[in-house]
Length: 203
Length: 203
Image (tube, rainbow over all chains, first blue to last red; front, side, top):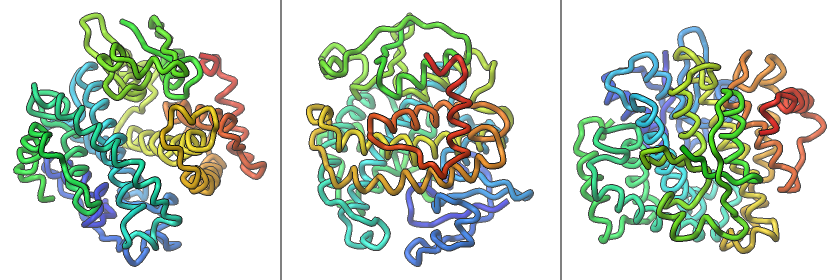
């Protein structure tokens, strides 16, 4: 088994933090995104979408996409449960995991990819107006998330879950995108400090 | 239990088709997106993200997001299995479901929302350059999907799954976005005809 990884990119980190929470170790192979190693013929044969992370099993089977890899390991080793237990918790963790991905991480990624000079060779074409259009959405969602966190410790309830991993990594990705959590979002700041203090955050 | 729905939008249809495959009936309440009913204070109190579908349980618990609602019902009633069985199938169905959402449905949605005159009052600001930037990605992904379907009947393997639902609805959403599956993608066309012939497709 081998996990194609890239140390500084947000999606591979979602898998590394998830594995750290599970106490699972998988051999990593770095893919140099700056050198466009993910666009080579050899890597494209493994993942036609040309993205990391990708898990390759011993028999050659491939699972790409961070959340697909995490679900593979959740099925192999359920404890500690990170995608929920019982229909309601499963649904609510998935709701928050998707919101934190689609309403926070993805808009932040659009700001980064469409405004950062370093991305000019990887995001073709960069559309600066699209970067700008995403900024108010990020602030709106952080307000919604802040109100939810007023009454509970973690993103989807009383238990740490994969939604906290996605959320922590989204907030950390604000810095390279030259964004910041507003001072007014005190609950988001308290939650982010708490999830960042877990040993898994360094993975 | 009540499902807030919108008959013509793609994401609520993902849930309706999923429920039809499961043989589950849930009372629907229509939300008029053209009249901006999803932006009202009353609806925002149910779903702060202001989107459909939303499932409200009898005790008032809320599950928004199409895939979160589907996972709730998969946990309640596993058969027929639509998210996979066993770690490898679970991972590969999630990989394809995500690809069909993030690399196909979402780019098609961006083309529609950022180029269609009817969306000018709902997508503010429309960024026409972003609509254009998505078009080649859709074609690239359809080529990848076509090669995968050359050796199997369904999106993620030998069994119909939630990935087929997402993919069918993505392809159907190409028409209002004024896009079409290239003639060369014969396997995609064969697969789309097959999944569209299932009774659930009319849901």
